[in-house]
Image (tube, rainbow, N blue to C red):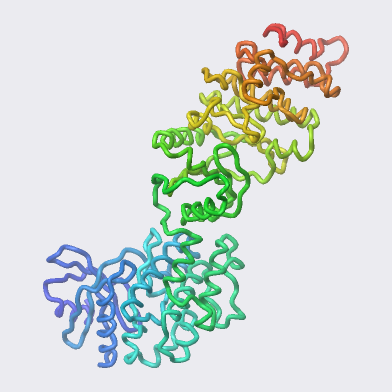
Length: 582
């Protein structure tokens, strides 16, 4: 046991038991200890300065901390002195110094969000009590595994200003405002500068440059940082105090207006209010706040009957994903929310190269969303709109890949129920990716016509049994896929009408277009296969995706050499065994 520890133990008496030495600083030592009466762990910091001026500085800092009561500032329980030593006793905090954490790697972005709220809240609390911190150092901020930060000392604050030794004033200049470096007392804007410097360091792992002209924007050093930090930090680090945020609260409000004031762990709650579909500005403002520390909103990708799809940055994993947020009108009832969660869980189990992966589900402020793989490419509706009817070979590739995905989904007992052009995405390699598995079932009571939707507002790709509210199975998906193929080949859905009832009437009569008449490059075998899959009677369609795939393969393979049965003949015999197609 060292001499210091012996002297401290003697001064503390039986009330506190020293457990271990935590860290040593140039002028102090921190110990972990146990309060034997209250049976709690505490932290004891001991002053090691030999001079009376040093002891007065330490005591004055303890008095300043004792005047503050904020969760992001260390609480002081008591001070003591004996045998030339002086110490203070405060709450114990699990974690590590911010500089140690950042030395491993820059902090996770959601943790910096949490730290920003904590620091700015602590500063506002302190300023309201007349105390200016004047300098915040990463070494004097403890961060917990959750990202929560706590200021452990304020030894350069205005409360202790007369006692600060000259040799200590030159430390940590990068985290000190220009006016405080010049020897001024400072004001709340000086603390805004210091807090911004700490956040810059936490995000980038670099100390901010002392001169504004040399300051590199955070996003240049780490491209996954949300753009809001460039604006916030560059303003807060301005050399002129009047160009910064005047108060910590002003910076806090600006930050939370972009990033939200809710931590990542918040859960879905009932809607605060409902938004009309046309209220784009309010919708996105509420969504930004709801996404909080989890995602940065980058832009809208599209919208439909169930809500909107956005391109977002996952701040935890630092990757770009797609986020589908459901319209608040669809999430008013707890049972709908629970049903959606169950279906999303089931859909997340479906892993297939032609199915969009679901990553996560969440919600706040009445908004419910899930995130999924981002496909940088058009959906089939956008593709046909841009290019018109597609070549036969391209449509066959789409069909084969979609059937492969549906076969796997049906094997797991899942029926998509909403196969339509908007839900078939085409990635840059031309590969099909099907999205929204489980969504139609989860929200099937949200509207008429079995929940089937399309961009035009009519269920042009839904089967008759689905539109009539009857029981559906995998054959419903095969019907919709065939309707989608007609759309890709002709540039329009197979059954048109001014109303849903007109569409149903045409479906009942199997009044579908003549593919070969409109597209002479389509052979008879393919026309028969697609015609069979789109029959109004489910029993007359293919029973499984595998059967559909086999028939499609039979009519699209090269014709065998002379003397062998042609694939067209084989396909015709196969179709005859399954029944007539028209």
